[in-house]
Length: 281
Length: 281
Image (cartoon, rainbow over all chains, first blue to last red):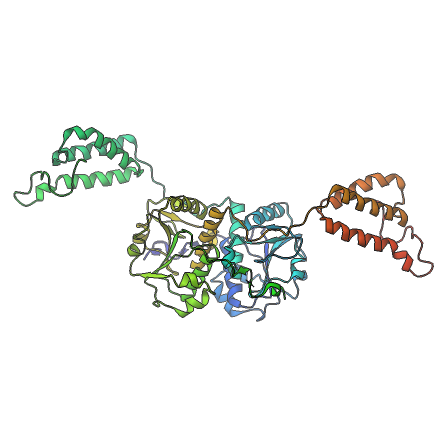
């Protein structure tokens, strides 16, 4: 239903006419990932936010992995480029800034930063043509201290301490999201539909039409309250920020209501004072 | 290995002594979710970032759902409170601010905002004791325009337009993450291990010990270069921001190296000028 309009180009929002993004970006390194699904979901999350360099250290079920491919949901440009290493040291050998993500405090002297600060530093580093990466631990118990010690700082997410255990692909997603926020100034893929706001003249035309219709309908039972009511009515309608098209639509609605008595049953075509809920309070 | 130290209290970072969080927070409404796994993963993501009010509109496989429970990874306090509704209108009936998340531009007059701006507005709204929520669409085709029209604005994520299709639980995660960032000022669950930086006096003690050891070792072949070298050496070591404990460790290392000739083979105990790679460049 929704989405059919531009089918073939759009797939749940993806614009397939756009080239895949291989701009310099941090590598994502997964240490001994156990589930192919998590590798695939991480790849998809990376693609969502413009990352593409995914490295695996000794994945439990080997590589390639069909479940990873399926879970990646067509993030093939990431999955196809996955590189596999025996050790973390090899996986990060070419990088000069590496962050370890962990959900637990460590008895290590590393600085601890959030994903937003990490993204800022990664962007500076990569912006000066140096390579960087982020390391993620095993699903069940994260990274060993020996592995964290190979990294420059610890990144942890601002989770609720009462429920801090984050799925690995979710952790990758948040860091990828912050990377993109930092490097694109949080640019959204589309913005509000362009609609020109109605001019004050167009609004006043609508207000007067409504007020005259109310006069004809006998809405104002106590004429001395009319001026204040009208100020409040105009204020209320002004808040909506109607477009010129919307004002035209509303004036059409108003005209139809105003003509309604012409189609009413005999004897009910006259202003019905005091009926229903209309009031000038 | 890592993590065993406080086993029983810590589970991959989760502190089970902390009470679950039921502070006022936005409801998350999933419209006709198809996969139980996604419901569960969304519940877990919510728990990670302090959300707990999850509502389902006509879940395809009914409710309860064992796969959802399993995927929630013990976010039981969220899963147990899930409410199921027949229509979106019923699911949002008690809310006064509702955002629709979508990955696609709509031909609707709604304002389009990012998850960060949404979190700011939700926090203001909920901070003034009003209820709010965020609506997420079906896995395959999102929300119908009729459903978006029930909402106050559109939230979209700053994805790469070339790969914009986000898993529903991932979308929930990003919005939950932004909610927590906004409402806790991105407080991290733990900070850098407290270590007092070495005082300048402690550092100077180490510098002098090193420089004297270098003098004894014959490191400075050209004495006139010594002052500049020492300035550069102190600058280089100062960058590390050593703690007092680290300075003591380094001074121990230095003392051991400085004594090394005592244990050397006969005839090799004297300063070895011009050997190896040491230089005063």
